[in-house]
Image: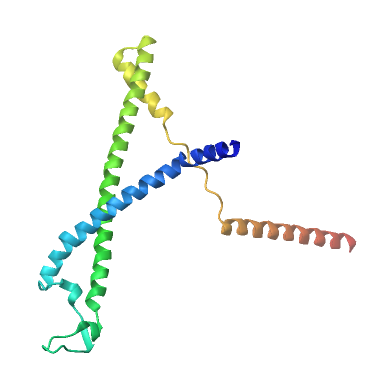
Length: 202
């Protein structure tokens, strides 16, 4: 019984994790999203393309090249027993992929634009709220409202100023050049010392 309780607690902990729930929601929304994109492609866009190509019954997918044909008694082509290159179906698959990718890109672009606009609006509201809070503090300290507002905006700008950029690190070429110069200086110093010793010995 205790083992069953522990197993249930472990399962409950696993199923209530944020990433598992997010994954489940993503799968459900992804399935619905796929149905919408497929319907838009097959029911709206592809019929227009097929009509522009020539209005055949199956549109682009019906285009093919018969290498070796087998014919029925009435003279019609027996596709099931013929050797046929269905290049129209291949083109249809490519078009489906491109159209679905374009539709997905357009929808994601719209979602990202709306989300960015919402984030900017939220940031602006947060900034206004913090400035008003600082303004009230300065008014309590005895400043005029206009002066308090200006000082609050100045204080907010100072508090949220970007961090100073780190100094640029030397490149590999610069380090190698510095090492070469140090070695050359040491070599010249050793040479001058040797020359001085030789002069003293002579």
